[in-house]
Structures are given as C-alpha cells and as structure tokens.
Length: 263
Image (cartoon, rainbow, N blue to C red; front, side, top):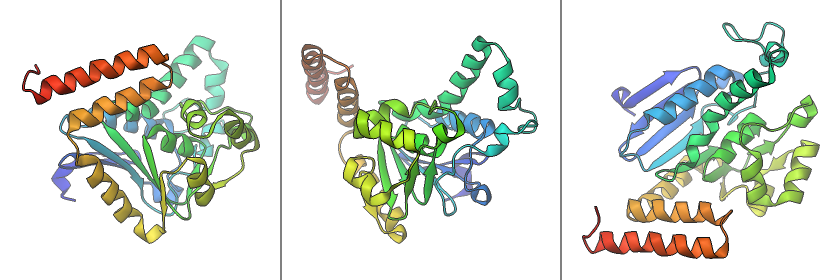
C-alpha cells in the first residue's frame, strides 16, 4: 500500500487507507503483538483518525500470532518506560484506577460504531487482551491455526477490556463462563462451531477470504448496512415493541432516502 496512505504508525499499530477500507495492523511481530498501554492509546488514536469515507475497517496483524495478550512487563515493578506499573496503579485510589481502566477500554469500543463494519483477521494465538480485541470487531475471519484463550483468571484478574458482553452474546453464558474460568484454548474449528468465528480458512487463504468478505460488505448501499447494524445491535436489549418501532423508523428513513426525500 502506498506510504502516503499511512495515517498512523507507532507503538505497534499501523493505520493505512485503501479507499473505503481502512487497515489497522498490529505490527510488533517480535513480541507476538503483545499489548501495552501505549498500544491501546495508539488503537484509540487510530479510531479517531479513520476518515468519514471509510465503510469497513480490517484489523490484522503481522507475524505468527494475532496477539499474545497483555505484555507481562506490565506486572513487573518497573512496568513500561514512562508508564506507571500495574502494581503502582493498584496502590492508587479506586477512582483513579477506574479512570485508567476506562481509558484503556477506549481502544476496544470504537470498533462497534454503527457507521463502520469491522472485521478481525485472526491467525495464531489471540489470548486475553488479544481475544478481547478480536471480540471488539463485528466479524471474525480466522485462519485454521487460530487459537483463542481468556487467560485473565489464571493471573488472578478478570477480562476488563469490553470482551465479556460480546462473548456472552456470541456463545451464551454457560460456555462463556467455562471458557473464561478455565482459560482453555478454543481452536479454530470449535470457534466456528460455537459462533466465535464467522469463517475459518487455511492460513494461506486468510487475506483472500477477508478481501472477499470486504467486497461483499461494500456491495450494498452504506446507509442500509449501517441502519441494519444499528437494528441488530439494539435487538440485544430492546423489548419486542421497542425493536418493532426501531425497525419502522429505520425503514421510514430508508424509503424517504430512496424517494429522494431525505435530508
């Protein structure tokens, strides 16, 4: 991709544009794309930099792993250069700690915007924070070597990077609890069977499969896709009456637009 299409390249995150498609790439293959507060800030910034003409964002990674999860350096007394260690954060007030975690979560929330469709291309390990980052996207296309694991409980922690709600929504409460409490690996074939993965392909075909999906997502009119995404997201918490009302309102907007009566 041409260099002048690169909007961000720092702290293990690169954002590039290709017309209506943005590519966010985790690019610290030497550390298996382990995550840190600096990476999370870069992901948040990438979300802010995505231009309005972008319809689809593809989240991918370099190297053999999608993301090996949180960089264990976070738990050392020295932490990361220029950052408070997690141990130091724990010694602060509850309000300060809550604010810091809320800032970290911002890197995982913008993927759910209704003006975008987001696709995670997952190969190799997606562990902990890596698993939650894949869950932040609307869709997941996986190589046949993909392995998901929520290992936070083995560290005495909980998944706190917005992954619990989408995981329960995809696989149900009982299976989500079992996956998180045991920290076991969910391999690609099981991920497809239980709804974590939309599609599993041979690793060599991952890029081509993602490209085919992106082309299909770009085929319908943007407003119809965005309205449909909004309806499906609201269906999770709306009553039947609320959802019927939302469907009527959305269809009214679409019909008026098609009739040339929109704003």
